[in-house]
Amino acid sequence: MAVRWRCPRCGCGTVESDPFFGEAVRCGGCGEEIDRREVLCIVCDEPDPLRRRGTVHVECRGCGERQMIFAEAPAAP
Image (cartoon, rainbow, N blue to C red; front, side, top):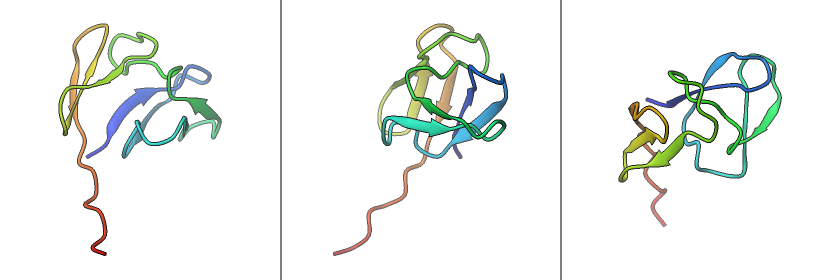
């Protein structure tokens, strides 16, 4: 499962497997690279909505919408 977010440029809803990896995410609609602090909440359109609420939970800072992410296990050495 991935975290849903809305693109501030084209308005397309898109998903990211780990929105906290790196400084930017790529929109699935327009293909633009978006600074992860610019993405919008898929429910309330609050900017910079995503904050971690533990290891698998993400919550919107504005409306409280909760989502889950499942990170891949690291490769064995």
